[in-house]
Image 1 (spheres, rainbow, N blue to C red):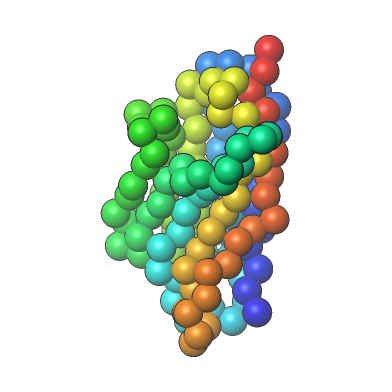
Image 2 (image 1 turned 30 degrees about the horizontal axis):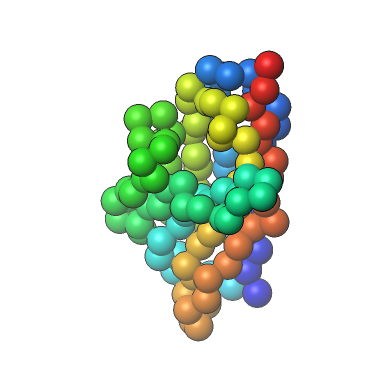
Length: 118
């Protein structure tokens, strides 16, 4: 069994910054892609950013230039640095990991609230 635990969310003013972290623990042989998704009230869950085991990244157009995804493979941790936050970034953010246990399974974190408001 593998658990993903997110941290770092909260309330921030427009233009502010937050850093999310997600730690994976359990019976892990290897983690392939890791990513962040978000779901705003009344909307579907959407991709924010992903990072491969080798460090290649992919971003949603809405966050390019403002958000940075990174990972520490030694710590099984993925980060999301969010700058220039906007009210429309308000959502529950979910961590995601493609894990080899040795079965290949996609795991999700429980979600963490990010609220951008003055």
